[in-house]
Length: 354
Image 1 (cartoon, rainbow, N blue to C red):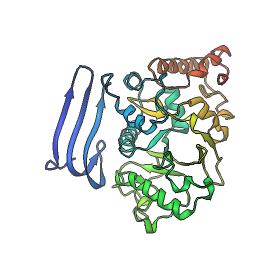
Image 2 (cartoon, rainbow, N blue to C red):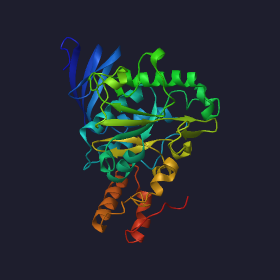
Image 3 (cartoon, one colour):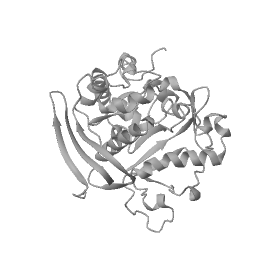
């Protein structure tokens, strides 16, 4: 719990359109996400948002404000409504996922980091309104500061030509933001002189790095990490001068994607339990292209992203009803696949002609 000497006030603010519970602290070292505390490396003035009912129309909803500023050049998409999506009821996610959602939204807004739901988590959010409806962990993609602006040293060369020393420095600076916010990052060392990125473009993360989960590990990021679950996977890439997002640039075991930013920006709202997360602008197009079309050609799940091959008709109809609700709430979703699925008598679906 917070030190009483360090907590200035707990304020419950109400008005006709918004009810937000916030804790306000000044000049403190510790940030509490829920029951656990995590440690920040520098003194901050924090306003922690715990519960939000939609703000008035003239005030951007917190999640919209957290993403709109990152994408000014791309604007916002009138098809979706951040405030209505945030207030849409009837969807629940796991407490761990909602903690990731709250912490990352605040952290990335503070540092103007563009991010969005990815892989299985994106399927869950856009199909069932919750990460856990399709995935066990919290998958997201993040763009490191400087890449969208064109100031990253690794954006000035072909993606795989970035010098390792330059990449290590850029990666370390970005991961340190998450580490200083109290997140545990597997294999991370906050000491740059001891850090080796190994050019990874996927990092596993856990809440609360103050916990010792592997006491014999020598790397700080290993000591606090547990492989048994409750983790998030952060995917990263490199944006080329041609404005394409390259993934798994140096990986030999994973498919390499080259995704046009037009599939992604401006990010849009997807439902994730009681809150929302940013999603790619074209969810269907993004998932159809991601991981070398992995989700469009799955033998076990079937080629229709909206349903699983083994589901019965009733379960498939539930998925359609869920996506219809998400669409009516102003959330981005897999709704473009509904009409073809229904027309096929719930056998399969295909994206509309683009």
